[in-house]
Amino acid sequence: MEKVILNIDKEGPSQKKIDDKKPLVSVITVVLNSPLFLEETIKSVINQSYDNVEYIIIDGNSTDNTINVIRKYENSISYWISEKDSGMYDALSKGFLLTNGELICYLNAGDLLFPKAIESAVQFFNETNTKWFTGLRSICNQKGISAGVDLPYQYKKNLILKGVYGRNLPFIQQESTIWHKDLMPLVDIDFLKNLKLAGDYYLWTCFSKKENLNIINTLIGTFRKHEGQLSENISKYWKEVSTFTKKNNVTTYPAIFFELCMWAVHPRIRTIFKKTVWHLNFANGVWEK
Image (cartoon, rainbow, N blue to C red; front, side, top):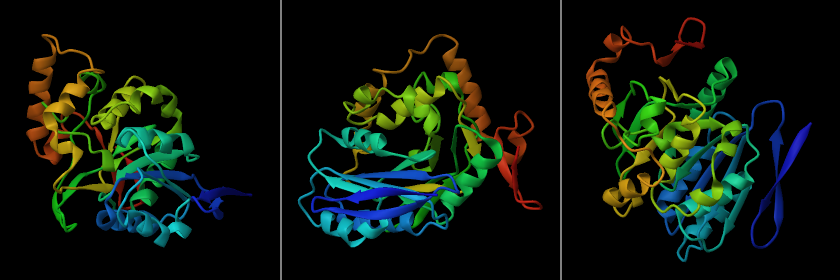
């Protein structure tokens, strides 16, 4: 049986067929006046090796060539809309309310998925049934050339809830993080849509109240570093994070120090202390710890 999801623009509907036999993966992109970077993002999603993808684009009423870029690829887009919003996370909240997928992730305009990212994520989910997971951390420059890749050590629930990742410990990469739809009821959409900078970290705190963040040793997405990004407002970002995270106490700082030491150790050695990373077994193609 096939589901039919409407591809709706301001002029009328078209149809995109979704295969019911494989888990549907919803990918959301929010954009405002970023046509050059958006095109590369769209291509990275629609050219995935996995074909059961619901792609949703929420545009904040762009006044440049962005809409023309969307129209160029609209036959491969499940749903898109262009209208004014109150910020990035207001737009993202609209996208979340539209998703039908079993697995969900989002990319900002300019960020990229690696070619087999969704295929890898679906295989991992099918084999382990974990509720949210993140891959290798990856950054590329303005031209899309990789400028750094590393394997995370671990992300602890209690430290996520205290807002230390990205400030005291290495960050959780949003572009490489995918979660199950069962976690979305944990998110207060009305609160999320009013955030201006730290909506990603708010999502991590919501998910951490129930599930551990798993790490898989594979490439999922990459963050493109370029001028004019919201992430450049770092002091305002952390001020916003403090509005929904717990305060540090006397036990937090020793925990942070220990984790910093573990992050500094080579991946092959740190497994002696704790096996926290899922690896693909090359012999049988199965994910295992």
